[in-house]
Length: 263
Image (cartoon, rainbow, N blue to C red; front, side):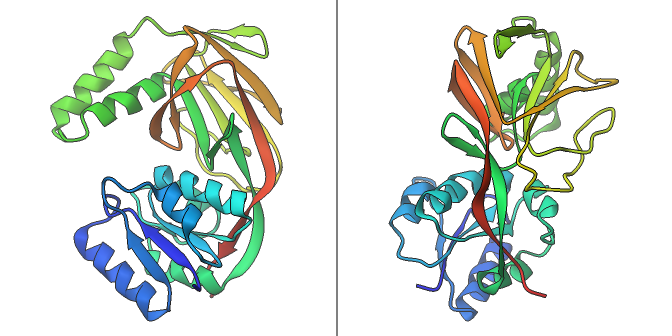
């Protein structure tokens, strides 16, 4: 098999999914449109393919990228979500998923990934107020009305029972703690973009208020995070998860064989 492309249909519209599948078929790329019960990692793990691709938003990419790393196969990122931060930072047009299919014949480059224990993240892992909002968003995923989002945001602002966090044994009072796969350019309110994905550095950003005037940062290759209680809500590449602490956050340099689109 030339390559396998897994497609998350929840990321695009029905018409976009059909267009992408047709374009992939014309290039000889096998596709699998994920059903709700499908396990993307399991499908990628058993596929007889020379390259593994994922079409989805940022939260869909990590599981298939982790399999590509484990199997030492090239990985293709097809931007199919709303923001497509990883694709943008990797120099892939975030608004043209069909053009990204040319990466199956593209140039390979090695990029870093972050890990929380063994869980891969391509962009960042967030803890604190933002992660809480992501969890509330997931709970209200089927209720898209504005009042639901505002209610979740209001709960986040009122929330006072933040877990006690330590990083490498040192207590932190950060409201937002974010571990990034390489350095972001940041402004007052948010993270921006990354100039490099291969610097081999994990950057820990912390803010002591929800709308920070400044972020503090620590650079390294490994941090140990502990919390009380030990089970911690987090967001990995914008998707909700729970971590058992203590957990080691570390950078995995040059782990991912990323294929770049041609042209």
